[in-house]
Length: 255
Image 1 (cartoon, rainbow, N blue to C red):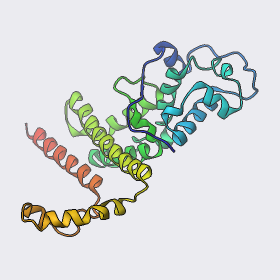
Image 2: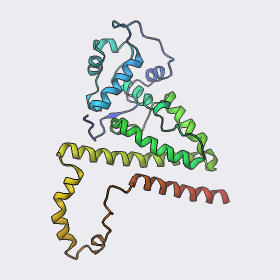
Image 3: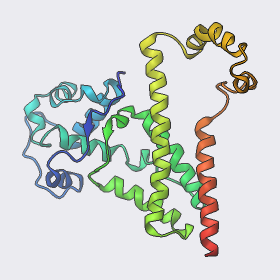
Image 4: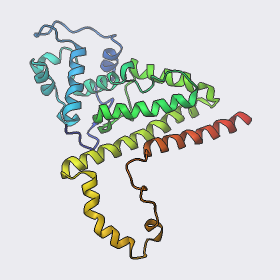
C-alpha cells in the first residue's frame, strides 16, 4: 500500500446538491448501465478498496472502472465525478459497522474513550482518510447518525452545546495527530528499509557519546524504559484529556 502523507483531496469540492441527493438517496436514479449489476454501492466500495490498497493518489474514475471491469463512462451514470465519489466514500466508512460513535453502554467518559479508540482504528483501516481535508464535510446519514449517538451519550456532561461539540472535536483532533504519527513511522520504515530498532541502533554510538559528555544530565538520567515500545502513549494522552474534561465537568456542576 502506498498511502502518502500530504493532503491531496478536499471534501465538499464537488456538486454539493448532487452529492446530497446521492447520500440521502433523494435524487433521480440512473438509467440502466451497460454492465449488468453495476450499482452506486459497488462503485463506492470499489473506490474504498482502491484507496485502502493503493492510497488516495491512485483514485480516479478510470482506475475504479478497471477495478470493476467496466468502462469509465459507465460510472458517470451513477456519480458525477471523483469529487462527489470521495464524499460518498467518506460517509460510507462511517457506517455503523465502522462507526467511531458505536459506543455501547456507559456514561460520557466511556463514550468519549470509546470514540477515541474506535477513531484510531478507523484511521488504521483507512489511512487515506488522513490525506483528505475534511474541514468542510458533506453531511450524510452515517456522519449524522454517528454525531447523534455521541451527543446523546455526552449530553449529561451538563455543558453548553458548543462545549459539547468542542469536547468531540478535542478527542478527534488528538486521534488525528496520533494516527498521523503512526502513519509517518510506518512510511519511514517502509521507505528506508530500516526497522525502528535498526534506525535507533545506528544512532546509538553518537547518542551514548552525547549522554556521557555531561551536557544533557536530565536525559542521561532517564530510565532505560523511557523510550521503550511498551508504554502506550496514545492511551496515556487520551486518558489525560478525559481527566481534564472530568475536572471541567465537575467545576461546571458547582456553578
